[in-house]
Image (cartoon, rainbow, N blue to C red):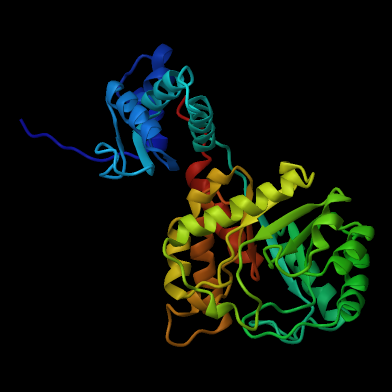
Length: 387
């Protein structure tokens, strides 16, 4: 007799079980046994990691720790835990009865399992640069008439949010005067407020943010990682807008000098975690914080691609997330000669990837192509379930 074998995707487990005649009454429970997840728990005491490892082994899975943990030659270790959802739930339940802070770790494991199943409907953020020196379209929409025509185009093509910026933050860009920034943004925002569209302001300056909030914008998109204007937090705290916390180092004039990471994903994760907790401690609600890993900001080409590959890991921070890769240098590096059409096609491919990785907001110049990527994704993944 001839046999065949093939791999099936985790998110198709229920359908595949039903197709082979599995009992519908037990389908939800059975699916947990076939859905797998790998978690990294960082910097925990060695005696705690030993308990977790022993608990994992008792449930039929394993945990990887530093080799010196068992020899008691190291105080702390990160731990990598892998197993089916069913096994991880059982591990979490067992750990919840243990001392040494293991109840908190159990809660974190449960939170990660819930994130694994989060529903997904990303928003498209269309970029409107009313600048003279942005890296791809500087000067095109500097005048009010052209800016409003472009905004209407972005909305018609399917943008959920318009992100308006009057200061370029590309590498080596020079800062502009705050008064000039406000002067350029104000008439655009007043006109956009007549539309049924969310408005985001791309600014590092608290005075600009305060004025734009008074005009009724919904989001402040700050690429400075809270390192530019110490008064920004107070402005956000005293409002009800959302705030994009974007990872970056340095300023546009020197950010390329700060691409030194020993562990790129972990360091960016930790820096965003600390800054986001600072915002929460300052009284800004978690629901108003949006995380951006900061593609292109103090990251070289190779680092940007690694970050793109590992973007889903940042869902574990527990916030909405935004990704902006549109027309950036690392995308451009894939081709010898890149015009805007080519860059937008590459961005569309990246957008399709980001949609699959549960990114909540995708920031792009060409909304039409990203909307095509989203529609294509929906055609594949949002069909009626087998049941």
